[in-house]
Image (cartoon, rainbow, N blue to C red; front, side, top):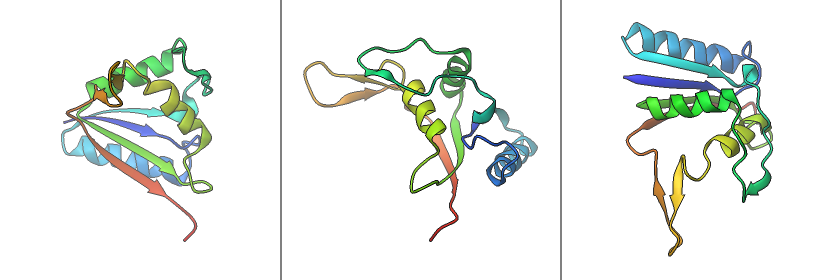
Length: 131
């Protein structure tokens, strides 16, 4: 299986970073092909300056992420829960990367959209230090 792992914690030396590394090591030991990106090593502007009215040009790290998402059969995301949500940098990654035309396509005549990333599964590993 082709696995794309995203460490969505900005610090690769965090507990989440060790979880992501252990997942990837285990998957490789089982014979899976694994690609990993670490959010803290990526360089991109996380802000949608014009919302979705204009798709901003993607930086090389985001283009690589899109290539990995298109390539994979399973997307593994490891992140902490901070203040009841995902880290801001991860939210910016999602906003910038999973835009219309890549992740989905709006219908001009209705409220629904076409899913452009069908055929993949996901493993979400999240940690939280509150009840």
